Amino acid sequence: MLNWALLLLRLCAGVVFIAHGSQAALGLFGGPGINGFSQMLAGLGFKPALAWAYLGAYVELVGGLCLLSGIFVKGASLLLFIFMVVAAVKVHWTKGFFIQNGGFEYTFVLACVLIVIILLGAGKFSLGNKI
Image 1 (cartoon, rainbow, N blue to C red):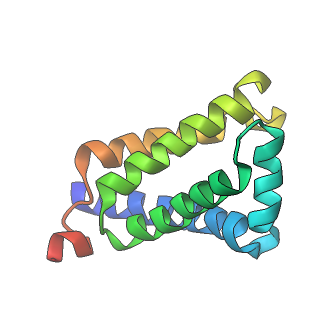
Image 2: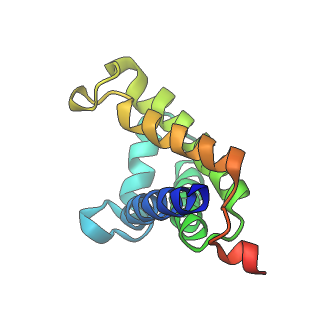
Image 3: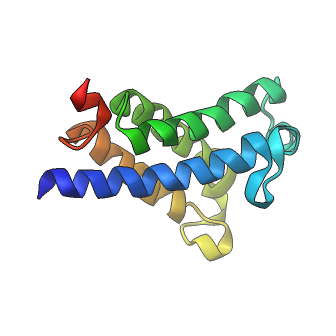
């Protein structure tokens, strides 16, 4: 059952990160695209904002694809975990815990999911396991 649970966890997290990465990188699903994401990061004090926007957006997008496929899962999960911690600290921390107030609840849950994947790996049902 552990391998089935890891598959479900990877697939669900992968879809979430692909969706958010697509918003930030490509402007899909009503997202800001890379320029809008860069402007948001500039407002948070990231310099150079465009470089950080590309890095963050593609960590989410490619990291989500890695989770979905089961390739480079531990490395992708570590990068995504770092991304979630930075988002929690720079954007959400001062707003408290609950998401309805803009808090870090959502990033906390995703970070916990990523820790589980880092610790346990991709599981038996992954392309990385087949290669």
